[in-house]
Image 1 (cartoon, one colour):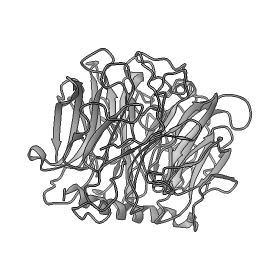
Image 2: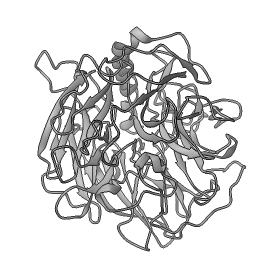
Image 3: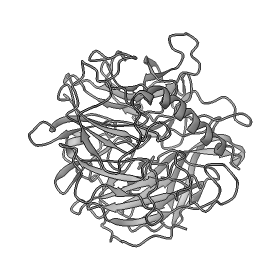
Length: 555
């Protein structure tokens, strides 16, 4: 069995341990299938605005909220370990008609969700969007994994099945009757250059998939990587037909091409199949999801990504790095990699921070190297310049931070700050210094709900208490600790003076992983205008594709 499979059990136990420390005080007996607005919430910082509403849902571990517009209404979309996809009104927290819906990879059996839902206009910008989410979890065993696409009204567009190659809960090296999970968040873009939007994701069945809007495989896919894929892909055009986007992703490695640790890949689509352009073998699994953006004066887009963690042998030390490679040829960017205090499971955010004029990189790290008593059992949030110079480092509560940051101006000054979660809760950090803002501290976050994913910010249009610039956070879980998750709606302390450069997980609702603010690009088709602070337009021609309500064989 691949060596990376052993790390899954370690991940599950580490998460249960560290989430338990932070969340036992707010645990409840069972989750709910549908959200219910409640007044009570975990302890709230006195300096940050109080939430307008809080929904109670099934346990939420890794699934980040996505803001989109459906039928003229701005909504928040996310998944939970109860196996449901939620779509709620962003202004009120109320369920949208037809929602929530179960992720039934097997008929009548909801599958737990750790992936973040992607909202994309597969049929063109004038048709309703599609909600796409991967399914499967190490926390909830004996469930079918795969990917499911919903129409905007909650009906199923298609179900895609991955392969059954081993037991992902016990690591037994033989099929167990359950297709492997899709932890990877799907990204949507045009990878072939023919104008069609494709859905790209990895699976624990070792395959990198690309499927069409009707749920069938793009010719030449899947690509066999010989080990599990946790990383979510980034899609960005660097070569080939105009508009064709390469696939940048991470993956585990257990001997392929002599590599023991992890790979960072660049695939391009050529002659009817995906072609490997470059790859880097690193001395650790790559579970972080790459971000693409310009980070230095060369103007060349770079691929920035962190590493995961594993156990020797055959792994060697390498779980304390964030790497940067030029997207066009894979060459290392000068000044990178940078060293952290431990594994970097979270994914980088790229954008200009307060106090700088060129794009910076922000990410989280465990603090396994901490020896000072005040830091033991904590994690770090880092900011680096594009040349790899550390700008600041801030200690947050919780020993193993899996969360990813977002970048947004919290004061209305026009300079960007950082919002990031940890086992201890949610933190606002000054972009220039990393200092805690609004009266928070490492021990006193905005709230104490354990946060393993990324929040999102959006401008909710209209009038009333739930409109204006909002911050949405999903937190709580895993179900091994508490059966209850939360969706918080916070008003931002001030209207941002500049559009947020990284407002959500993977930067936009299609989860492209591209820092468009550093590239002079327009946001992708379907990105909520209110989320990026500008009107959504397309820099690429798109071709509509017919939908399907049938099930894709997927193999």
